[in-house]
Length: 250
Length: 390
Ligand SMILES: Cc1cc2nc3c(=O)[nH]c(=O)nc-3n(C[C@H](O)[C@H](O)[C@H](O)COP(=O)(O)OP(=O)(O)OC[C@H]3O[C@@H](n4cnc5c(N)ncnc54)[C@H](O)[C@@H]3O)c2cc1C
Ligand SMILES: Cc1cc2nc3c(=O)[nH]c(=O)nc-3n(C[C@H](O)[C@H](O)[C@H](O)COP(=O)(O)OP(=O)(O)OC[C@H]3O[C@@H](n4cnc5c(N)ncnc54)[C@H](O)[C@@H]3O)c2cc1C
Image (cartoon, rainbow over all chains, first blue to last red; front, top):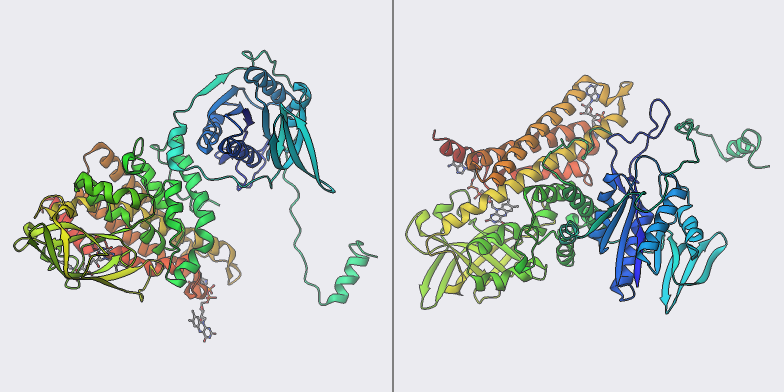
């Protein structure tokens, strides 16, 4: 079984992002970039399926500028077999990414596509769902457990009220939640081997997809700074303030 | 924050993406498997033995060693080594890398000078973390003057009979083998050989030196040899050529120590700068008192110089034209920088710095072992003076 995993290059989760002075976007100058944490979980899950003998090949795909090859190499070091980069320029919207991924799905015919539930830059939480619709595949989003059984995949989903189990016919789409697994660290030998693994590059033209834009970003600004707190004398004063000033209890 | 551990590292144009990836993955390993426990291990003077196989799995133990023995050498260069030593120093518990990576001084004699049979016996289990090796040069009678060592190995048929003792041996309590400097010939450097001594041999015994100023996590031992019979096949290199083996070992050790000293100094900078930004005295931040600002940037200045010097030495090692005098003085540059940074950071921390439980307080206690071990500052200066033909 072939598994396709999507990985995205994003600002590292440790970095405190800042808006550019002119408010046009987030300042990415000299900022540490990493693989999106949810995508890393997706790679780990695919590699585990391969180690368990369920998957035969794991392909990591990323849509982005040339620099996103670094994140594909990370996926290869973690255990993916080969990589595909769809080379784009500048910002690409979830719908276009989904269309590009759909084209890769058509080419590679994977039985399972695993994506992060969202990426920590735009936090859109759309790409997996859109891909499901475009590719006409069943989807199990926010997965906290995956089990492939014959031509089905059972996915335990994290939903507001608790857990929900869905059974999907393969091929299918899964998006990962935080508790699906804990990604490993790549060993030095695997980092060195990853350099030699195959990495194909396509353009949107190669895949017959037009990169269009439907969203205009108007302004990016930092959230208002939190005001300094105060110290209250005793519980009575606290309760009084909560009731009469903050008006959050009655 | 611009004076944190990473920001205070100047850019190195030699680094490629795979180096950055190695740092990322190694840091993740260290932050998960070592950082949360490091202080407890130091206080307990003990590192769990399971850490070695884990460090092997991530590629740390095998770094730079041949693939045929389970290492990874192809494509590996000085920059991978720099990153490894730097990240290990970032833990701020010097006893951990000292002990975990002690095969870095014990194994190269075997790899570079030992017979194929010796390599096959020792290297794979050491690199997989299943067994351990140490380096035994220093004796109770002296460490700096290696040529005067007094432990003897006398040939008896197809064995050597070893008598004497070694002291301050890192990893000595745990070691299955010790690459040991012994006297097989006459006086001076020309009578010294290197011999691989298994610690399960009859007549071998050891005691732990457990009250040290620093490096508590590391097991340091005195070793005793009482008529220990060692097969002649365990000779590392040729008989009476041991001095050469010892000397060729030193460049790598000194580079590793220099890297780790600079990085330890950088940890001090990071902690001091953070504290100086938070702490207020006389109505302003410590960082706003000129005396303190100057201390901090002076730390940075010395760290910058040391980083540039390290890079220059690695570049010359990569190019194959390193000057041992330059490397000896780099070790001095690094220990003086570490000493300065540890002192100033302790001073900036004030009373809290004197309390146990911070990286700065620990590093302060680890300065001297770095300034003395692996060739003391005085011996390094002497060596350099000779190299420069003074
Ligand atoms: C924690 C720890 C771990 C160690 N691990 C190991 C290990 O794994 N293996 C190992 O073999 N050794 C190890 N050592 C030993 C270390 O290498 C020696 O301590 C060092 O070489 C100095 O030797 P010494 O202690 O005998 O001091 P000495 O040689 O007695 O020197 C004492 C002082 O005199 C100075 N001095 C000596 N000769 C001269 C001279 N000609 N001119 C000017 N000054 C001079 C020295 O610089 C030093 O300051 C370790 C030491 C420590 C503290
Ligand atoms: C083991 C121990 C025992 C002690 N015993 C006692 C005791 O019995 N009783 C007691 O009252 N206290 C005691 N102390 C506390 C000690 O007196 C304080 O640690 C000391 O006064 C420094 O104060 P601090 O730690 O708050 O550092 P800070 O006042 O925060 O100073 C931190 C650093 O900033 C520097 N600094 C501060 N202001 C300026 C400035 N304007 N310009 C330039 N540099 C500045 C300081 O010199 C210091 O290096 C003890 C401390 C220790 C470690």
